[in-house]
Length: 474
Image (tube, rainbow, N blue to C red; front, side, top):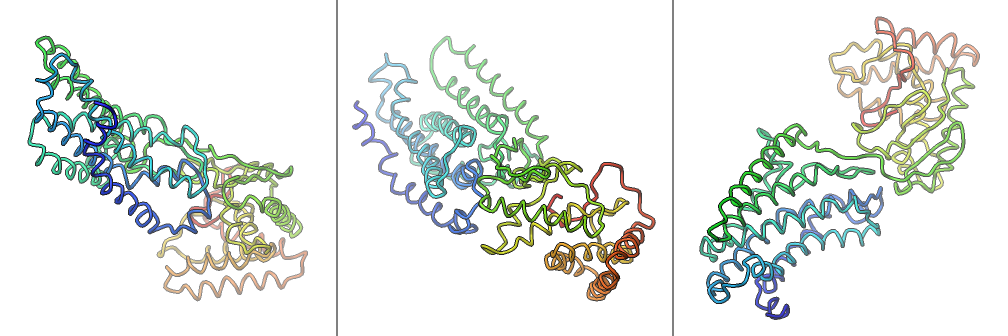
């Protein structure tokens, strides 16, 4: 049979308007429901992240459609008694020809959204960015094998739709499993998201494929007839069980949505020396790099001129390069990680970068003690007033008082006397700013620091003690 004739007779072709229409609907509606087109193309753009987002809606659909179509085609082979008509031809070869359009349909369901997303964002993917796509395409082949065998064992009119729906449901619901975590990571629908600058580690995409391939190989071994096939069947079954068990044990230690990822792959552009300022090239704000460095240098100079003890770092690096806080290196006295892109994006075109000055403030003003990282509603507010008054005074020094007050006002909401605390902080900072310039640091700022640190443990040497809002490492 020629390929054209094979394609015309395949269920993959005459069902194409259905699954193709669903792909189009999910891409243009569901995929843009939370993130409108303007936000998607506005950045930050990272090919690995966009590929993962595009595939997230389509894994279960591709596997379900593939299994259903393969079941239908397998049942057709049995109905047409193909094996009786051509007993000398190998089963795997005949099945491979019939399943080629089915596998092509499954691949199209994965390839179409990825291709459209990359065209939409004008990104050129690297091989590492395409790893989840290759994983899904491999698993599609495994489902085609299982579906073909299912079509020989059950009536295709019943098995095909039930198998497709059951596969879609089970794969889609795997992200809700919590008692046993391994199904989340081995189902073929990756539970781990990819952030800017990250790729999936090889184990994250390899284990689901190995599980699917091993199960499909065992199913095919039992389906292929022959008097001397028993040793091969036992071997294939043993390998499949071993693969599933070892993979499940490995994936159980990954956490709910915490499969292995590799971070720090996004390219950066840097300018200047001491400090050398670096920003993500594809973050969407790199054209403001010179302005960002000017704000960093000017803020440090103003703090030093005001008498604040600031250790000028050798490098100030964009936190977007390690967007996920758990993978980001900790800031040191020589290397700071600040949300440069995030703060530069919020500034008006041509306007001052108050957010960058705010980030420098939080990264540079330290206290001689280790202050609590978070503040609860039942915490005493005395030290908070002293700490925040000192920080507000420093914020006025670098003209970053507005973003600082917005942040602290949001934090004070949890206190019953939040407005009074905010008023007290402003009052104390105003008194400090009213003092003669030479006395503001020695007679007031250092005293406020000492009062805030009363009863607090001493800060370890060499460890920055910057205070900033959650999610902004400084």
